[in-house]
Length: 466
Image 1 (tube, rainbow, N blue to C red):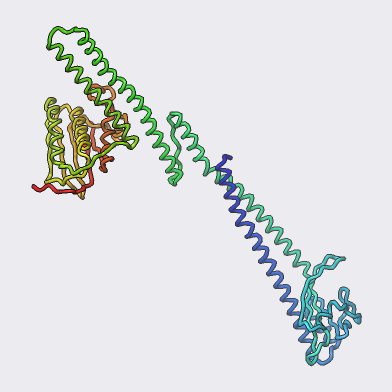
Image 2: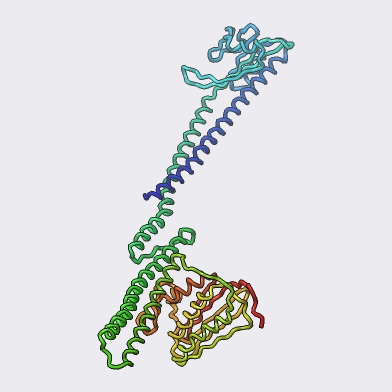
């Protein structure tokens, strides 16, 4: 039994006991009260009948007493005002003896009746008694004591209590077995999840068996999703380190090699010198871009990316971004078109970051499109500015779509240098988009092309009138 199973078991058993114990006591009290009320009522009723029968005539006769006694199975003791016993002998009460004052005293003092219980020491028999006074012309003339043997009733109550205790004990035993099974069943998935999370923390690929659709099942699904994402993260992180090492090593080696050539004067003409300088410049730009990507991603992960918002003319921004990428698209014989549906409201955003998003998406489209076109569309819909960047490129495999915005993820890992980048571009785009209050989605079909869709809530500081 694990700790959480023990805690649940203890809680469930405490609940069972909290229900069964008061229930047992309640049932016992109900039977006891029924028994007591019945016996007291029947004996009191007999005493009342005896008194009414004996008070009908001025004088109490033996025949009258015998007739009255024959009406009941209980023992009836009749005594006069002097305490002399008039009825036939019963128990320790003998005819013509004087009854003890403990029986007659309360009636002589004016009590209308009294009742009680007693146990016979010799036999252990139990009795319930009721005493009532006899009145003649409103004056005390003796009394009637009715004694009922209730030993069988007590035995019945003992039997009821005995079976009640046994029933409660059996219920507790069943509850204990039920509690153990339930606590084990409830705690087992959590224990398995705990073991699975420890394996995940060690980097092992593991899955939790989900056997229900409740909160525990949802937790299992979440752990499985976490395992997949962490494994994908670790895998891509390793690839990122390899890619960054390669990307850094390549420009650094170029910079070092051509700088040494220039330093040692190992060039034949002024043209060679310019070519070497141009290569150093290009590689330094590539190195700077890579470092900036890593730096931006790090700042976004820590929530330290600064945004400077102002009213931006989105039509102008999009036209400028398209113009910057058009030359690269033309070099690959690709068509790059911009379509703006109607005048767009100015957007309160960070213009530099917005341009960075657009350039990244369009350059990415150019890199992964060998023939065809790239279309950029912008329109407003339901208080949202929507921008779509579509291409007719290679597309994204279906299994890669859910991870396309993950850090370090690359679809074509074997063609890093051909396609450019290290898998940080789209992660940066997503981070910048969300930082500006927008949302980005992707639709892609392998071999047909890809569409990235950006949406930003409109904050209208001004309106472009055309």
